[in-house]
Length: 71
Length: 481
Image (cartoon, rainbow over all chains, first blue to last red):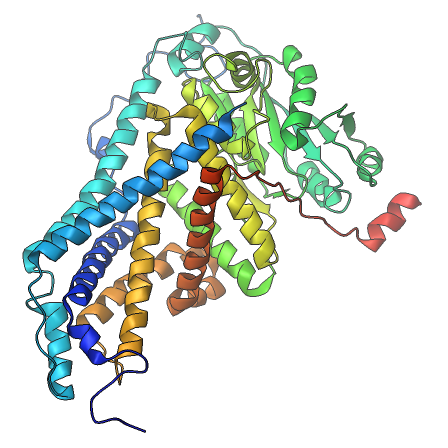
C-alpha cells in the first residue's frame, strides 16, 4: 500500500531535509573521517624516529647480570 | 579506603570531557550548515540526499582535511607525550620518588653477581582443581622449568590442595583471607619476598592459564640481559572454542597483541594471567604503599583494587620501574563463555580501570591510561551517533541508497579490521571482514563502558564473579587412586 507522498517505513522523508539532520549527518561524517584516518594509521607500520638516528652501540658498561670483567 | 570515591569522579570527568568535545564539534558544524532544501519528488530527493552529504550541508573539503589532520595530530600527540614521559623516568636519578628507576637499580647492582635468574611461581587458586593440572603441565614442560612452584590455596573447598600435592608442588594455604586473590598473594609474598635476591624473579599466574613453549626461557633471558628490568608481562590470547562469542574475544586479544608488538613491548597492563616480577620491584611497591602509593604498607597488591594487576602495573611505573611485554612470551587464557559472564568480566575491568585512575589521579605515568579512557568514551559517542543516523535513514527512506564515497570509507574500516586480526586465521578474518558483527560486539562493549561509568558514579558496590570450572571425571579418578 503506497501513499501519494514518498514516505519511509516510519518517518517521513522530509526528516532528511531538515537542518538538524544535516548537522547530525555532518557530525557523523567528520567523526567517520577521523576514525578512517586512524584506521589507516593502524594498518601502516609504526614510525620510530629513534631508528633513523645513528646510535652508538657501545655501552660504557654492561646492562646484564654478569658484571664486566675487571670491575 | 576511599578508592571508589575517586573513581566516581574519574568516570564522570571522562564522560563530561568527551561530551564537551562532541558538543564542540556539533556546534561547530551547526554554525556552518545552512537551512535544508524543500521537499521534492523522489528522484529529486535522491539527488537532494546526495547533495546533503556532499554539497552545501556536507563537510567542505577543508573541514574534511581538518578532521583527518586533527585525528592524526591527537594520536601522534599522545604517542609523543607518552614517549617523553617514559624517557624522563628512564633517566631519573631521584631515588626517593622513583626508587626503581633504571639508573638507581644499575648503580645499586653494579659489579656484583647476585646469582643466576631464578623463577618462583605463585599460582593463586580458589577451587581450581579442574584447571590446575593443565596449568602445572604447561609449567613443567617449559625448558628450563621454574625453580619452585607454589600453589596459593585460598579458601578452597574442593580438591585443589590435593591436586597440587599430588603433582609434587608446594602449597601455601592462606589464613583468614577476606580479600580474594590479592589478599592471598599478599600473604604468600610476605613470606617469600624477604629471602629473594636481586636476580630472583617471582611469577604470578592464574590457575587456568597455559604458557606457550619458550615463555620462561624468553623471560629469564630478558631479566638476565637487563638488571634494571622489573617486570615481564605475558601476551595473552584466547583459548579455542566457545563459538561466536569466543571468536569475538579472540579477535580482540589478537588485535591487542598486534598493538603491543607495534609498541615494541611497551606494555599497558602486566596481565594477572602470567607475569614475572623482580623481587626488588615487589618489595619497593610494598614499602611505598600508604605513602607514595595507595594501599596498606607492606601489601604488594592493593586489596581495595578491583583489577589488581592493572593497579600493580601503575604502581611499578610510578616508582620508575622498567617493564616490558615481549612477543616471545605468549600465554593462552580462558574466555568468557556467555554474554552474562563476559559482561561481568568487562564491567569489572572497566570499573577497576576507573578506580585505579581515580586513586592515582592525573600523573605523568597515568596520562596514557586517561587518554585511552577518553578515546573509548568518545568512540561511544561516535559509534552511537553513526548507528542512530543509519537507523533514522533506514526508517525514513523508501529504498536504501548507497553512496560510493561512504562505501569507500567502509572499505578502509574493513581493511583495517582484517589486517589487524590477520594472525588469527581464516575464522578471525572472516568475522572481521563481515564488519557488522564486530560492530555489534563493539556496541556491547560500549554499553559495558557506559555502565561502568554510571556504576562508579553512583558508587554501586562492585561484584567479583568467579568462573566455576566443572571437575573432569578422569582427573578425579586419577587423583583418588
